[in-house]
Image (cartoon, rainbow, N blue to C red; front, side):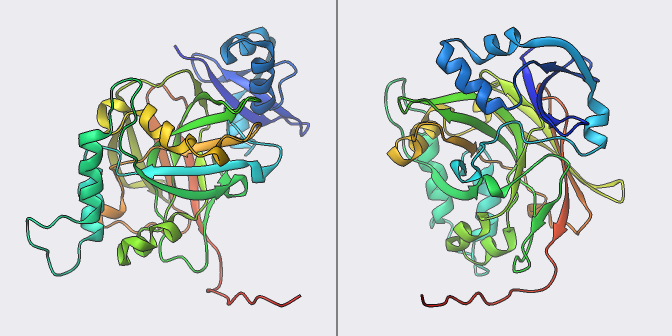
Length: 336
C-alpha cells in the first residue's frame, strides 16, 4: 500500500501533516512536520526519500480523520508559504477518448467534411503518433495551459467559486502531479493526487481560442498526496450531487495505460522552460481527462457537490460549487 499524506489544521489552529490509517478512520500525526513543503525540502537536504523522511517522523499521536473533514480543517496536500510561488498548470488532449469530447465542443454547427480534422483532433493524433517516445528521446509537445498560482487553489471540501463573469463552472476529474524544485534547479516529483481541474466549458465551446480564458479558474486536488509513481491504470468515478442525491455519475480512466502521452513526455515539456525550474517553487500539474458532465449536457448549479474518487488515492475529493454574486464589472486602469 502506497504511503499517503494529508495536510490539515488541528483544533488549536496549528498546521499538521498526517498519514491515513489503513481503514481511513484516523491520521497519524508527523512530528515536526507542519507543512509537506518543508518536509520535502528537508528530505532533499538530508539526501533521503520523502517516504523515509515521513517514516522517521511518525509519532504516536492520532486524530479522527472524519472530524477533520467534517469540521472543514483539510488543507491542500501541498502548498507553498508564498502562494505566488505555487504554479498551477495543465495539459489537454492527453487521454484516449479525450479528442472525441473536445471535438464535439469545438466543431462548428455546420459539420466539416469528414476528411477535414479540427485542430483538437490533429493535436490528439500527434500525441498518439509521438507522445510516447523511447526512453531518452523527446516526443511531441502537448497542449499546455496556465490555471493560476496558489491563490487559485481551493482546499478539499471548500467551495469552488465560479467568477461572476463566467458562463459555466464544470468539473474535470484528473490526475495531478505535485512537484518541488530542488536547489540545483532539478524538478522533484513528490507524488500524485486526484484533482478537479474546474473550468468554463461554455466559454471554451464558443471558440477554442478562448481555452486560455476558460482555464483561469480555481481548482482543487487531494485530499491525499500519494507518494511514488501512480498505477499505470487508474479507474475512478466522477459524480455530482444535488441536495444529497446523485444527478450525474460516470467512471473515468487515467494513468499511462489510458493516455496518448507518457507522463515523462508531459513532464519534460512543462519543465523544459527554465522559468519552471526556479529553486524552491512548487508546481501542480494536471494531466487531462476524457470525462466531463458538460459533454453529457449537465449544467451544475450553485450548491451542487463535485465528488471525485479513485482506488488507491484515499478519500474522495469533494467541493461544492459556488458562484460569485453580481455580473461582470468593468475594471478600469488608472494612470500613475
